[in-house]
Image (cartoon, rainbow, N blue to C red; front, side, top):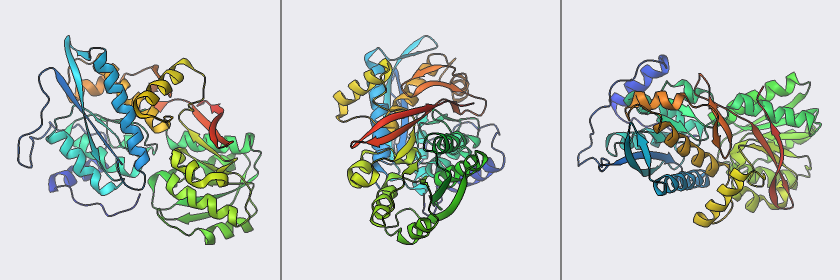
Length: 400
């Protein structure tokens, strides 16, 4: 993601700089609420959790889908009587804040969730570049954060309060490379990536390393910046390298234009991407240009498991449409949090952190989730294919 990071406050910046230099330092006690006004503290018998995401902006479907998944999980747990922590029953209240997909807004909205709304845990963000700005705030205040879908390894390295329920880019990149070599039989691949995105750069690096290790050749590597409208120069250079496939580890908003322009240039090879492609807007706007293409994801809604089909049915009833992977991860992240609350000694940041970190074999819609010593989820990658105007399950790749 791009943009100039604004100062949240002098205290936050100093804390964030210290954390980046020593990620595993102990978190100080939460600071008192500031900014004037009365903090929106939870009512008796109520726990407040927060979500920060791109509810508007270029990647708005990411934030909206995640928010819908979290809302569905909150609705279900409250309907079942809430959560029990150390023998006391609580209902869940959700407060969501919009980052517009801008890293520079993350610190402000996360600080607000913690100091004014008094959340006990933060869910978010989707984009790794945004999570990397929100995570230091959670670490500073000693409030756990669970990102549903930020895959860059650096996110959880911010500190011991930061978790994720998705796989990380080294495995996602390896899975895409394995699929390109084994399933697509590609010997030569070109790469087109967003040079300003931590997600895109990280995924590109991991794919390149794994593809070369598997005996493949990267014949062209071209860069762009998010929001560009003309990709003809990069695509022309890629066409000259005659690749068997093009790997595009970007977000759906850019992939749409890349797909359309590549087909106008007569390029018929399959396009391959990561979970940043996961939006109904890609298929809607790219149309035939994306047919026969593939991307890695966290689940496929057409997988015939009872858990997935029950989730799809409930989501459709509440929000309409088929839930994407971001909705499924938001749902899983919230449900994993509620399950951890039931095992926590208290709602203090450290006790809740310890309970989340002990998660083993949690049965999520996106697969069984076990958190390792780095607070990352160990789970499968699903590959989906655009066929007949729909994204359909193609393969599941397990971690080593």
